[in-house]
Image: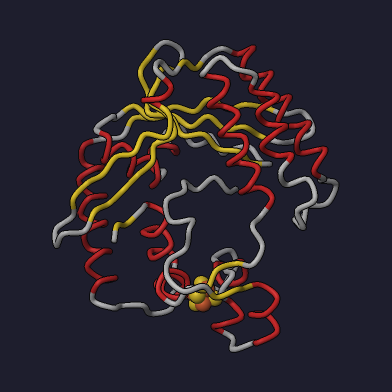
Length: 267
Ligand code: SF4
């Protein structure tokens, strides 16, 4: 068994939710359109760096889900999402700020770290390349809202970037945010992660794995605004013992989720 950032962050958000998903096998019935589109878009980016037709790749990948029963947001549709994605790819090519040499080696880079006790921690880094001519570890995000940029330095607190910086040893990190809105926009956000942050993350990781392995799965509910984690938690029906909610949202599969290894591409 190996741990991923997604698992650790889910445990830190709510240990009960972690147990319900990873140990008891409760996962959401419907994949969300935004999450699936993010994966399709990432594959199209791979084609861009391989100097192949990324627009055709996006149409092909996203085309698989044309009739999928996604619940789209208001004013969103399969066509509209595709159109936004194509405009973002075109903008990305025009900007020409990111280069990934040897894309087969430097995209979706798997890095493994051995944890005390014999477990592994595995991360898939989106890209190691250059942004504006400088070497960065790069994470792609697709979203419908801009990432906040104020106050200055905010991005250096991003736990996923700290995790990837720690495991890769690369301290200059960047988010390339593809914002799907009326006028699509790309944010190129840079940050530096310190050695202290990496050491703190490693300590947090080891503590968290220790808690998981010793079976600590208490509820971390947070129903007060704006700490409303429960209201957006897919496991709310289980915690409220509400069979209708469970039936509407969840399905139970034996074993761990097949999403364990994915980056958090969702919004
Ligand atoms: S509903 Fe709240 S307490 Fe229950 S698993 Fe989700 S976040 Fe945790």
